[in-house]
Image (cartoon, rainbow, N blue to C red):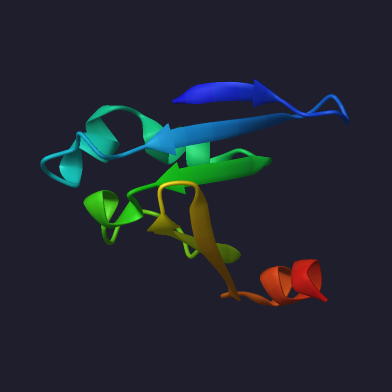
Amino acid sequence: MEPHALPDGSEAAHFDFYRFADPREWLDAGFRDMFARPGLKIAEWPERAAGLLPTPDLCLQIEPVDDDQRQVAVQALTPLGRTLLA
């Protein structure tokens, strides 16, 4: 987990699950407690912690188009997510 300061003084927690071989590593790392706290959480490779993460408010998918372009798709998965996209 890597913390990032936000302009409003709060903090975003960035999780990269790429190296996780087993979803139980999420539990062993103590991330359940971190996800229970309020605040912005950003998870890369969430499928590596399948079944353990809470439902995200937003799902962002970033796909390469070519070397210097990306296509971004944003999907709201909760009422809060829909409010954020409104």
